[in-house]
Image (cartoon, rainbow, N blue to C red; front, side, top):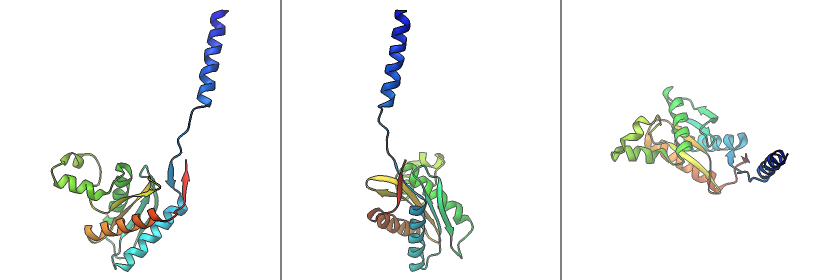
Length: 163
């Protein structure tokens, strides 16, 4: 009987302590935020007369919003999505990945990541809440648009949800 009482007491302690366990709140772009980022990127691309494919992803790299502007190569669609996904998952600009490869860090080539300029994480309040990927006519312009939009979004109040 003592063993049964101890077992019941131990189970009660385990279940009550897990009820008091802390949860982690994670910020992520919500749909409204993703649409705002997409619109900002489209406006920036139009100002530069640089039609682009634009992808916005959540922190896990899952697609939230996408647009391929007129006069953009079809392959740019997949490139934009993969650039955004890589930036989100690595939590750093894809420009850094490309630069690392150019300096001899070739392991990135076999990692299944896109190592082309134009992907940028979106950081709000110190948290990566998503990322943007731009694919258009030149890697330099892709990178500039992604940086400009990410900087603008990071300093503005973009809708994000807490999971």
